[in-house]
Length: 199
Image (cartoon, rainbow, N blue to C red; front, side, top):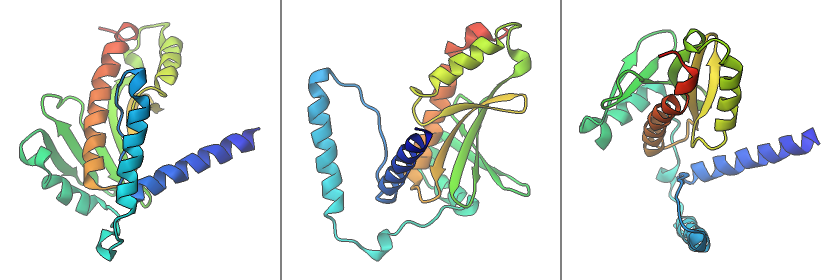
């Protein structure tokens, strides 16, 4: 049974990777039940239009690195117009810090590995949880992991974090989307988890 679950998850991961390599992105929309069929049909039509385009060598995706990622981010409309600010934190492993306007207390820390890009935001420490509420909070966060778009909760040492992961073959618009979505999810998490945290 476990092998079936693993193989199913692996197939899903590969399917998502293939879609990313085609330049596709995942979006979430809210429509009435009667609109479900129309949305599915539109998705199919858009994907078919991309697949029918003649392949060109220059459409091959170039793997993002910490260096070219900061360069590409700096040229995006969101950074140019001040909606997002980016900077590099020097170290053995370079880290890019991205900050959404008016949310500078929760910077998104981005690191680029061989296969994936990890974006992390620090939420709170274990010491900031109300006494006796830690188990309830952990269970609540586990339940939140499924509905939270493009993000997941985790604990690193004593620090609670929200993170997202992208392929190094992602395009820059997907990275911008991850930064924006992660920041929005942080604000929602702080609101919904308030009852578990010290004031």
